[in-house]
Length: 97
Image 1: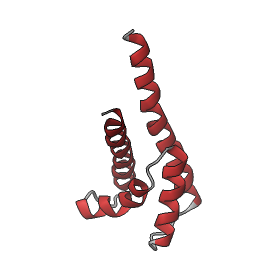
Image 2: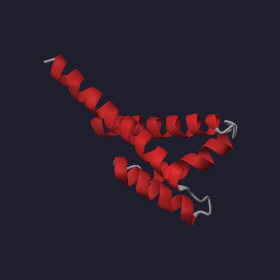
Image 3: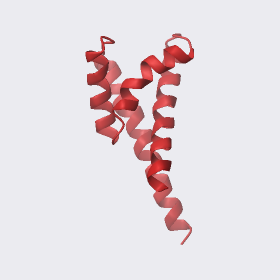
């Protein structure tokens, strides 16, 4: 059950990253656009660095390209969110004991 919840939480973090990023670049928030941007990162979702490295590599292999600024933003955003929810959950568990 915990593993399933972790997968859902990670997917939500990736989707938040994609939706916020697309909105900030006025790329629109169509389902197709979000899916196109999200799938490489969702395919790479293992852990923070794995998600970023695999996601960026898959983007390049799929012809979507990448840029240094995008790599930095994805490292920072996904690091904060993927590690942040785990830290918050750990604190919540400790507080409930």
